[in-house]
Length: 297
Image 1: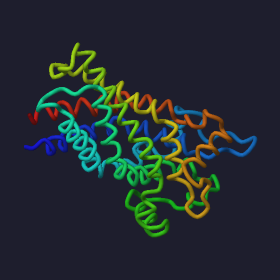
Image 2 (image 1 turned 90 degrees about the horizontal axis):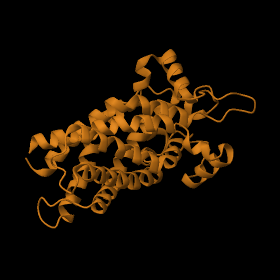
Image 3 (image 1 turned 60 degrees about the vertical axis):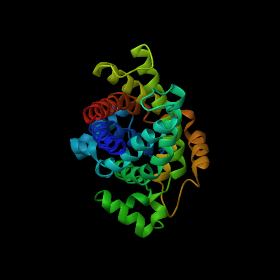
Image 4 (image 1 turned 135 degrees about the vertical axis):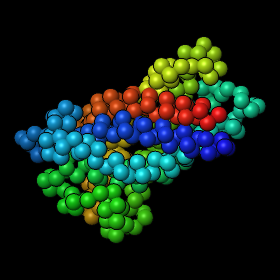
């Protein structure tokens, strides 16, 4: 079994573990990010993460926390194949000889390269996911885009292809997606390697146990979101924006308008659920990946 196939298999298992553990937190994050700014004197739809959870379960049941999971789950194999395979191939190119451990800086470079490649798969997947997750938050807000009641991932894709510019519409938000994935994956893989080497007491991390991998993976995931969270907010609001009457003309315009209307705290809406999600979800992902990769030899 070749290295690429091993990375594909291990990455798929890791991605599935990450989705199952983390998707409910992600749903709440997107709801908080995308809820409209209320009119003067009116309250926000959700007062915080706990309120969003309560309202979601009351209106949609527990299944509402997993809304939009179909799109990333359906593409998890391709997404993680690109992420871990590109990273693995870059590791091979950077090694001085087969099996040589990489430095933290080299892992940062590998993560950045993987982030570039994976952005082109992440963007349409994220658009579909965000539309499904956000439609209940935007319902009744007067937003024309939410007059469309999506029935599922394929329904979102059909609507975008038919009414929002074809394939180009599915890549709405590609710039902020790339601005999230490139630095985010660079710092995540760099932190992951740095913590593993610290826990192992040197560059050879092959003997680390599950507990150490969980700690390294959880902290690495947290570093991803801490690094790029405002970019993720910009990406989300652009992807759920009305196609015919857009509120934002682009990433910079979205950043400026959010900051002008809500201050810098507006760029951190949903930050709590994102950080709470990142630790267990990425711990599960990296642990599942490492164990599967080790089992494959």
